[in-house]
Length: 216
Image (cartoon, rainbow, N blue to C red; front, side, top):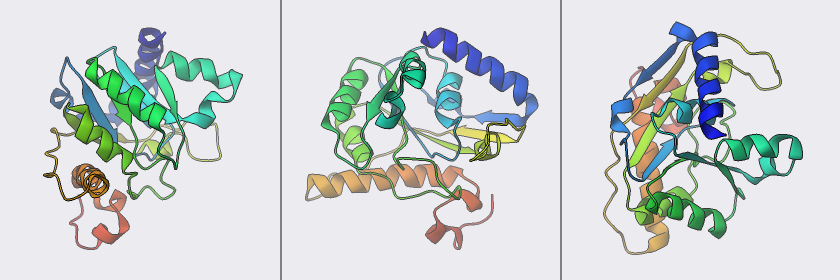
């Protein structure tokens, strides 16, 4: 179902947002081979929109396990090539499945913050994304998104037209291994989030970084 759902998502984005949708840097996403795409999460539409814009049909999505509990929505997430991860835990099944997808040459889209940011600012990432980046052996492409939080605001089902921006960045240069794997995972996760932060307007960066960052 993914090619069909992807086409529907692209059509909706073009119809609803049209010239309000600003996309940069898609050339950074490899056209073949395994790729780990890592994004910040500010709006409900982030995952399907970010993935649908990638010019490949083998995009897979890591999604919170709660989405798969309801039969009403389970089919939709499975149709979008999504697979469950238990948030707040070292979900080994999800990590193994992600590494398998990457090694088989697919794209996997993950959001290391775990859920949508309540205020739009970057939050601390889960170290699991560092583990995936270290062991996946594939390019890690950061993507910065903003404006989607106004398309479908929290607490409403009404879709709004808003300026939406997506910036796909160059592959992240991962830091050299440190003394312990646990610290390595956190250092790599932080490096990825820093790459995302560098592409965001100041108001969306982590709170402790905004004061010293110039406005975009």
